[in-house]
Image (cartoon, rainbow, N blue to C red; front, top):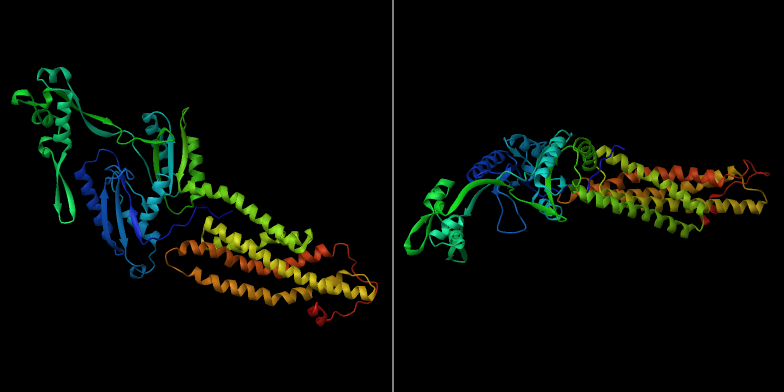
Length: 511
């Protein structure tokens, strides 16, 4: 009950991706200054080898990042060069504490993992909230309320709701009547705006194997405020006259959404949540309960929890089918092997006890339930059933030999005879059982001490097997014989009517 849940453990890629977010409206100059400050702080840590940050988006439709969202790639030195006792989680916590800048919300991930998460769910943090609804104003209000609520949930290191409003735009609206007096069309005015302010690629320069587009537009001093645009941007008219843009268009600054996201044909607002020291499933359960209690959704608006939590939900749905199906297959195979339900149920009832050791070892190491752990438990269930089958074969063989001897003597089998047969059968099973345990442990223990790429997943597959083999050994040698004694001796008398002959060991071995 104390085990947490997660989709998969984070793989250590050897590189961190720092993705801070600020409020909309930040200038390019301020963004560059902020990036330099963050890079300087990160580079001061002795574990960091190099830092490179970028803001905004590349010329691609798959990365629609606004200017206020930056990405900093932090290349780390090999762990052997780190200070003694330093871990990756501790390094991230120290960096996050040093980068608490006003107006900046931090998020930490890894490059490959971040790309996969953003392409599949759109959320780059471990947990995200998506608020759906028709109106952008209401969506922003609800998103900020959710941000406020999850800030107080234990384990939250940062929470940031995308602002759907707050972007600043220079709006230039042509005055058709004024333009007509100078013989200008709306297209003439818009062409000057696109060329002088937006810039136009006029040629391409070739530098060896490199190609660069040459973009021409007015210098910053002529386009940095509406008054300069209105008075100094000129529109050529008929006869060679140059008309200031402010005479043929109205120019003013407006606010609007910096970007509009849609999913399932509905506008959506994202809330990014970064957490530390909590398991994913437990955190979302607590946060979802608080959000449901404190944030009232108007009709037509609803919330979805996203990020890695989506993977966890899909994995849990599949495991609810896979795990019972695995147990059913094991039970069918056991019945086909024994041909009787008694032995089948003895093994199936004892399989949960075999899993106890894996659960205890997970709790001791601080691991959470995940897909990798589930795979380990499924494999452990098969091994536990296999060793239980071998023990039952030995017990059935010993009991059959004793029963045959009793039939020769013409006396009825008693519980004392049953106990003696079980003792002999269980002792015969000690050596092969210990050989099985030692062989499996010898193959799995090196995985627990591995530290290479992917070892995080492999350790979680091996831990249930290692811990489970200990409890499975106790199960096979102690519990199964006890259950077998209770079931097989249910209707047997305590003593025989004649003197019981001594059970000969060679007879049992020959059988």
